[in-house]
Length: 450
Image (cartoon, rainbow, N blue to C red; front, side, top):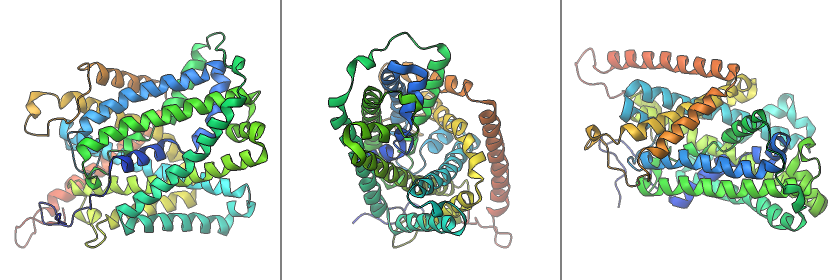
């Protein structure tokens, strides 16, 4: 029977996740609500080139995912890019990446919950305001938190079911719709303007985001050094295929796709009728619910990792002795998300997600190159997976992340800088608390609260 405690004798997380569980977490997070509305925005900028653009950005995302895969294959604990950056560049850099990971998750989860409420409001308008809205948001967050607390296996089952639930309508849409595509409409035509290509590229880079959370629950994976690289690569393959084919069907079946507010639903109505539109609408609700579950799982593990690595007091990393889940981290993450979702402040915070995601990408990609240095031999594990072509892929991934960062708006850059500054303040407080709390003033012994 495997041990339930770690090297320090504290209760450890239960390793239950296999390669396909991790893949479901990635697919679930990338394919959120955007895929159901994105085809219209892409078509506006690039017309018949739009399916090619989706495929191209899928390849670009694969470069970053491959870089993540190599560095992830060195670690078997919870934390993802936070762990890699800390090992490569020290405690402060790691803390900033870990903070941005958690910060982005709670803001995104709060935003997704509100999208879900708005979707339900299409059928029940009274749910979108006042006390009914507050009750719906609170109920959803409490249910997802309770599932997370019950165990990683229960959480994984829910994520798997919701991932299948969101993929099935998309598969039906693609398989049925391909017979109705007006293929001449998909002729690329004149090359779009540089501004159109740039706008579409930025939009798709963000739409493909979310796979960076795959390594976060590494401490709950059965074989993280082997399975996380598999899940990262498989996630990008699945997402690229689904999103590219959905764009083909939508563009090839719906005239004036760029003018539609619900492009997949409107397209499905063309060849499947009202039932097809309803299927896509239900799929969108399931998809957003799945993204909420992913936010609950990954956000709490980000907070847990900071405590496990002694960058926050051990209280934040408390693991329930029977359920083997990070109960305190789950409750805190859920409570902050609930506050943001009810107050609406997530709307201003959500603009940081563009920059914070790129900070995470850069942290992981730069760490991949740095940890290849011989000075880290024996300090971190040798990689179980190595990206081919030497430094070419990691360097390309870094250039891509920097290029996207350069295209961020001034508001995104400002809010991202403010979030990083807030992280620096929290780090300074944590360091001071650690220095004061490490030793008991009466006995001089180390205080295990840190």
